[in-house]
Length: 78
Image: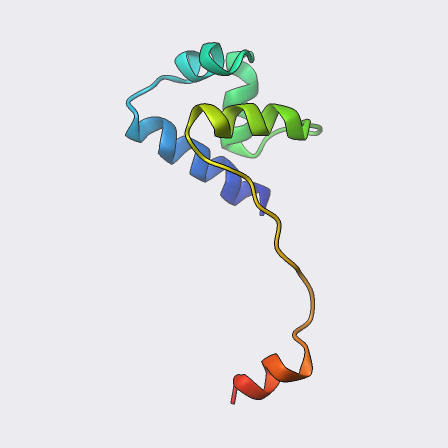
């Protein structure tokens, strides 16, 4: 899931023709942090940092339920 987030950030940044350094400056972060997120190569990243990056890119983070399907969902899969 976090790997997909990094890919989305990279894609959106490139669509805007921004370098990692430009995105870092706009979001108030270090360029190495942007690179690490895009590569899914970090051990601990705060949600506020991710939120700042997404806001600069015009994106938002949302949460959805995760888990096994319920009985009604299973019935609809037939």
